[in-house]
Image 1 (cartoon, rainbow, N blue to C red):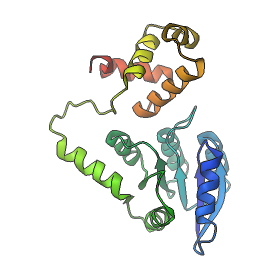
Image 2 (image 1 turned 30 degrees about the vertical axis):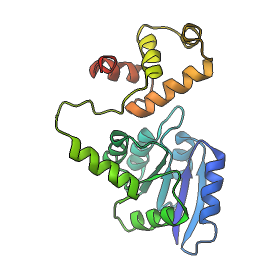
Image 3 (image 1 turned 135 degrees about the horizontal axis):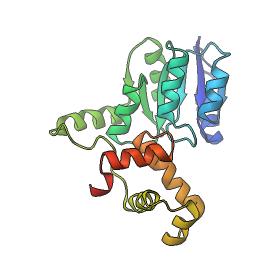
Image 4 (image 1 turned 90 degrees about the horizontal axis):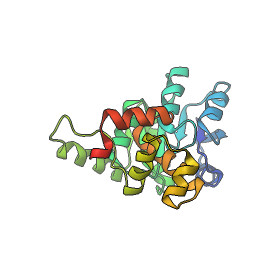
Length: 213
């Protein structure tokens, strides 16, 4: 029996995956968590084989959670379950120890195959993700290419104001958007860039000159 643990900050996603796996004779969902920190604590007391891990989570994103989980238990087999299709983000998850990457629109058979494959110690990428990675390798011609996903125009506007030391409320007022929208943009950029906090976001933005791209 393959023991699976699910970490995702959306309860509906967790419940959906649980439903897909409910009647499979060789797979058992032994626990769930709504954040990376909660998952780290709960998994300490379980005998988990495979972790299905969301990437875009507040506070502790999936990339950092993946690193910490494997530091805590190197035998875990981690499959990223995400809506993100950026090749750099996929590579970041894989380079930090994930053995699989499946998009959130995957069906039951795809998720089951991913779980069974990584549990055997093999790598699993769904067909779409595999094509994205192959195309990114084929198109890579410059070693100095920015290794991160492209930021949207609005994300760059928010990032510039963060660099200018505006508060979240000041950014919201200046761009005529909601406080929560600013936080969402900040969180999305942290996930895209693999930053743990705003200080990391600023450091990466300056180091790679992201606002000049």
